[in-house]
Image (cartoon, rainbow, N blue to C red; front, side, top):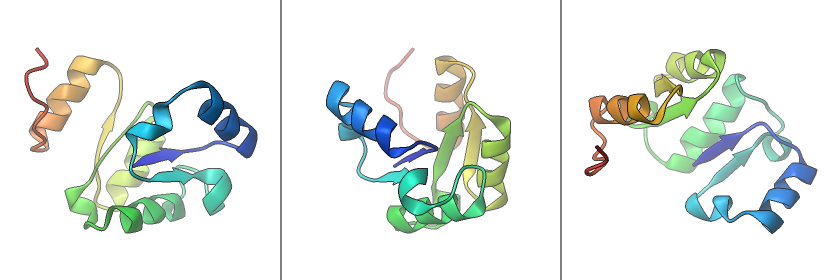
Length: 101
């Protein structure tokens, strides 16, 4: 699930130029749900789309305030600073990331 603060113009540009949206089962876009990270509402949309309880989800973002907001809802959160630290955090949360080292 991609949770993004964005607007319609950026969404269309990305759809036309890059296949990144194809990697996600669900897109939770602020311009569509009417809420921005770190607001609780945008994360509630993601939880509903996931169909799993918050404690079973993992969220990463480069902004600490967004990670804290996810954590407050019970979502495992990690502030992205590097790929290696993200892999470590995913593994610590029980996610099988394969052999990425």
